[in-house]
Amino acid sequence: MGARVSTTCQLDDLVDLLGQTIGLIQARTLVRDVASSMGLEVTALRPSDTDALLDKLAAMPGFVGIAAQMARTRLRLAALQRTLQR
Image (tube, rainbow, N blue to C red; front, side, top):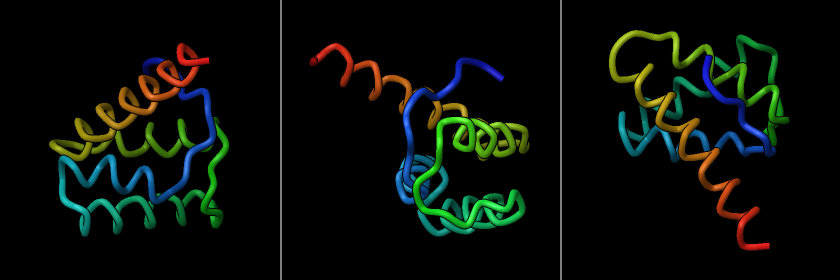
């Protein structure tokens, strides 16, 4: 499902990114529900866990799926910016 995320990510960061599009309350509920269904009970996600969670969200219909795709892009851009600043 698109390019992969290459850095660790906090669950709250995903909530914030999704919240910009679908609202914080819905984003918080969705991220926690999906993370829980995947057995992810941590706050810091490995890149593979972040990708898996975003894949599940991106597969959802409507704005949620679009918001997840946008969140993945924002995470990748932020990682690229950090790399270029080094």
